[in-house]
Image 1: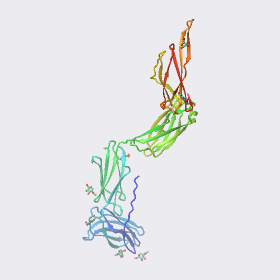
Image 2 (image 1 turned 60 degrees about the vertical axis):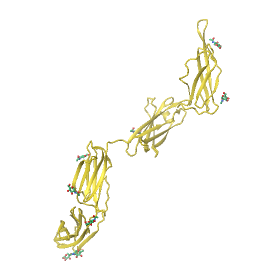
Image 3 (image 1 turned 30 degrees about the vertical axis):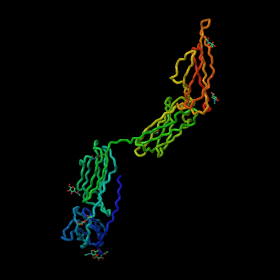
Image 4 (image 1 turned 120 degrees about the vertical axis):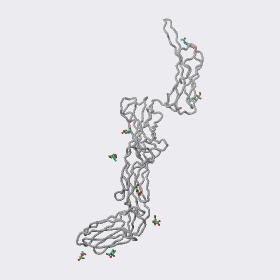
Length: 430
Ligand SMILES: *[C@@H]1O[C@H](CO)[C@@H](O)[C@H](O)[C@H]1NC(C)=O
Ligand SMILES: *[C@@H]1O[C@H](CO)[C@@H](O)[C@H](O)[C@H]1NC(C)=O
Ligand SMILES: *[C@@H]1O[C@H](CO)[C@@H](O)[C@H](O)[C@H]1NC(C)=O
Ligand SMILES: *[C@@H]1O[C@H](CO)[C@@H](O)[C@H](O)[C@H]1NC(C)=O
Ligand SMILES: *[C@@H]1O[C@H](CO)[C@@H](O)[C@H](O)[C@H]1NC(C)=O
Ligand SMILES: *[C@@H]1O[C@H](CO)[C@@H](O)[C@H](O)[C@H]1NC(C)=O
Ligand SMILES: *[C@@H]1O[C@H](CO)[C@@H](O)[C@H](O)[C@H]1NC(C)=O
Ligand SMILES: *[C@@H]1O[C@H](CO)[C@@H](O)[C@H](O)[C@H]1NC(C)=O
């Protein structure tokens, strides 16, 4: 709703004798409701009161009003002063007739100090088809409300007049109206203008197609989770495209898509003023739903509700659960064949499940065990296989985890070869 508070301060003069009291403003303004309050104290019947504002110089009547009053029942009598009243000397004349006969008068000062015109809309931004509620009022410098006529116009961004109200006066001086925007209004800044006396007030409002504020939700789980972990820390961040953080509540749902069971684990948090929330998912919650977790993935889906608009956006992140903390792989680029009797050179990559090097201390070694197999045809025409373990090689583990295996002396009768890598990485054994 529109909120509006105007404090009116009116200086008054009184006209009275034993049988009546009349209180009237001491100032007169163009366009104002000149309101006098009348109380008949002693009369023989109803009193007809005529109240007139006259120009002192030529005694012409500018505006007047009549009312019937009953003894002991005070009343307000309004005299509508013309909006085009010009500077001069003026008087208020009152006359009673009927149950009480009296006349009296007092001078009133003309005040031509300018009005301030105010316009209010219920919102700053509207979407097509919405209703623009507005109101207009004008006040004098002493905050007394102007009650004369106003001209109000609404123009679109192309300066086309969309609607106008001429010579309107509102209740208690406040003109309250609305404009229904069409389903396809001109987008941009619209203008409401109100003219009261010589004063003009303007108010701009914006009409635009609804564009949801763009922001991005990111869910950052750890790069891998081990079956032996007790908790999974998950970070959620939300930022507007222009960089400002989003604050508001966030709900993170975690599921294991590999399992047909649709249950999920859910946690709530609040994004802090950096647009960040840290959540902790205990592994026990997943185990009670799914049992063993490795080698499956957990998907975390966060929905962030922006406080201002209530708009919800979603982001997600996935992490895989591993049993072993170290991954050993023969690079796919390794030669697939070896040449009996010659050396074999290949590469073994030792890494964490996420592909990053394992934390290693200076002199850690991996051991490469090579078994060669040779085949022979026996007397009864059966194949027999003879396996021979070559001497194990101890190779220092480089920081990047890429181990060069240079196997010398492969027997010339070898038909197949198996390599096996073992190591002791920061007390973890593979
Ligand atoms: C007019 O009002 C004044 C102020 O109350 C009072 O003193 C005076 O007697 C009144 N005049 C007449 C003619 O009643
Ligand atoms: C009302 O006026 C009459 C006649 O002027 C007078 O006799 C009477 O006392 C007045 N009453 C009051 C309450 O003043
Ligand atoms: C009021 O009117 C008088 C006479 O026309 C002029 O001298 C004066 O400047 C006006 N004051 C204002 C505030 O407009
Ligand atoms: C304006 O829209 C309201 C609904 O929001 C409708 O009830 C009303 O009749 C419309 N008035 C005009 C003048 O179109
Ligand atoms: C309002 O508009 C009418 C018609 O255009 C004009 O005669 C009048 O002077 C205007 N009133 C004000 C206060 O501007
Ligand atoms: C956001 O998450 C809550 C809780 O899981 C859910 O009730 C709500 O429907 C979600 N909202 C959206 C838009 O996905
Ligand atoms: C690694 O091997 C080197 C020799 O190749 C040896 O000196 C060193 O002690 C070994 N380190 C460990 C931790 O076994
Ligand atoms: C292959 O050669 C090794 C010695 O280099 C020998 O021990 C082995 O028996 C041979 N394999 C066959 C099938 O003859």
